[in-house]
Image (tube, rainbow, N blue to C red; front, side, top):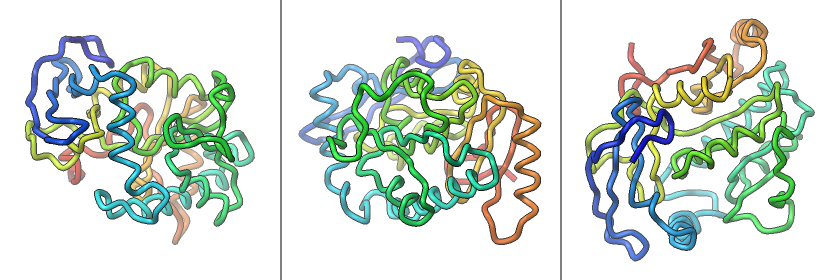
Length: 274
């Protein structure tokens, strides 16, 4: 098996037992080039098997105000809405452009942005959203969104074309927003907290930097408050100037800028290197 990100060989890393009706165990394989880790078990599931597993993992909390497996879920969404609204106000994002939340679940981030900040973030979810204010598949045309955000999505993808499809939705000078866990190295530990049944792809700073370059992005900004990356295709000097000006404010979101991928989390999944 070759890596989805850099095409280097992947080798068996470890396995984990779940003993669930939808998933008894999983084998995780690690890329020898960029450190990306993928569950070969999940990658081999049929579409129906994958849908059953996702439904079992998410249906229990979607439509509620809490996730037993993620106590900060709701507060993080509120922080992300605040930061995205601020990013639009200061010019990092095109405030009145076409925004999309891809794989939005029950649409709480969109609802939060609308209710508190008056901004429209369109909703799309292949599994959870049907009708109503959700976009249909036919609305997802390449390059038609000025801003595309994915929260807790990159850890659920098993094929390269799934990653590429999300990127392809971003307009030529648009911005991609990503919330997922990225660490310097995925730990060799079947008890690692991020190995929940529906998580199958685990990213390193190196693998994310490769995706960033392969897709042609030029600069990135990270919000610690929202645990959210913004990737920019446009002029890095412009982005840096906006961030420098924004960070002079008091009692407002702060941003960390880098030309290239902002590899903020280095020491571990939970602690930044000093």
